[in-house]
Amino acid sequence: MATIRDVASLAGVSVATVSRVLNNNGYVHEDTRKKVVQAINKLDYKPNAVARSLYKKTSKSIGFIIPDITNPFFPQLVRAVESFFVEEGYTILLFNSDEELEHELKILEIMESKYVDGILIVSNTIGKDQLERLSIPVVAIDRVIDETIPTVSIDNYHGAREAVRLLLKKGCRNIAHIRGPENVYTAEERLKGYLDEMKAHGLPTYVYAGNYELKISMLTTMKLLSENAGIDGIFAGNDVMAVGAIKAASKLGITIPKELKIIGFDGIELAEAITPELTTMEQPILKLGRKSGELLLKLIQGEPLNTQHVTYHAKLVERNST
Image (cartoon, rainbow, N blue to C red; front, top):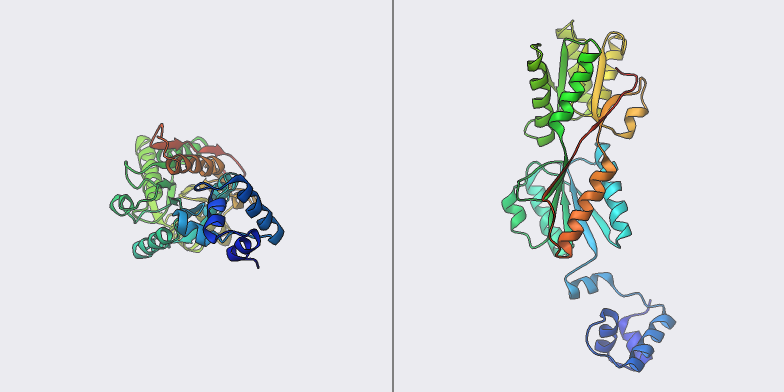
């Protein structure tokens, strides 16, 4: 593999001159430039990306921190983000944080050392103080970290209320909520939406923890249905938990949607792959990814943002589980 010294030797110039040509930095006589370009082409020289990033303090890469790669929502979000940045000539460095603050802080150190140009983050544990200390632009996705941090998210509260209203419209009166993890922004907003909608109709509430996980949700739903015989509707805080609820109903011999109606939240591809197909509040995942990319790219390029926060609305998609 050719090196920059090989290029310099073939062109009859110094390594510094080759570097100036590669980085388009500093004066180089046109004849000399042509010799260097010819040498590069002849040797099929590929500049070392790491070395260039050290020189320029940039790497044409974006760091992306997500909390749980096993949750199908996040791979779809990553795909949307990557699609946008590939068009702009950037690569994505993906990190899974498991919602652990120490791990997130370590990841931020790694990204700084690699000179990433910007950071996208889905987090409920890191705070604005840690992010504001960075010299790298940051945009939050899915979860609001602080009003000072640019964010692209969903109106989880009103989406949850709409989900409950659908179950009410279908005749349900004893509606339970399988909630996500405590202190996670999206889970708290969806829980609040459920409670307020049920309160508005003077109906009892049943809240059980599912932790955004399929197996836990399945076991939780079996417990819920065993303890409360009159449950006729379930609003699950995400689609993964809704699938767990459907599996629980199947194990208990409860017919969906005749005896029990279930709605989820997210709009992941899995929702259409199960039987019965899942009714859900669908997030515009492609829009979330593209808009977050657009905001981050503006910050990288030093352009002002028209708005710090972009909020989308989830769309009700009715299928066979209701």
